[in-house]
Image 1 (tube, one colour):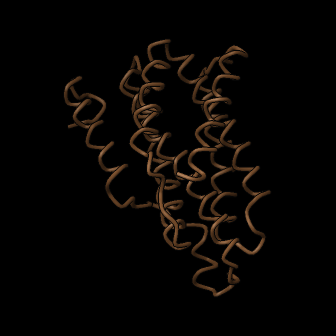
Image 2: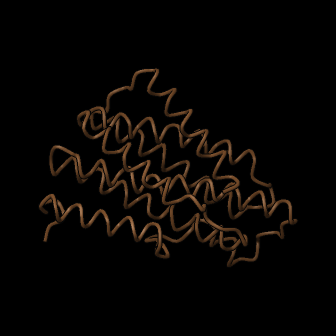
Length: 217
């Protein structure tokens, strides 16, 4: 069955299935990780223990962002007004799924763990996505654009904080940063509205709470 022509109940069941896959299954990327070049070539230098811990914590934060992206875009797809608009969010979630896999695999390579609060982050992002969708397609796309713009800035800050020796994590984050900027531009080109300043401030505050917490939990 065409996923864009499913009944509302079918879409909810599919959304629940994707939530379980995001939170409980090992993510599979459709593209090779940018870190693989360094892993296979032996070009990646060894990290000190403090560098390894810091890199794992930063990549955990990035992984949480990708968990939230899966939830938010799934919710926005559910609330989209047309099959074409729904497809734009479905496609965005598919592209972000590579980021989810890349960050999780890198966390594991660093000997770290994903966030203990991932179910909470997922539920919160899903609820936000539903609210954005209910406000109309232009607002929903605008929310997507603003989210991706803030994520791009956040990833840039991580490039400044990651150990210079961690070339594998840095390659992943740089590729993610480039693609998030592309998602933001695409959302605006589809007609996304500029969000009011208070809404953008609230999003920054919520993101700050999430990133500070996920760094440790």
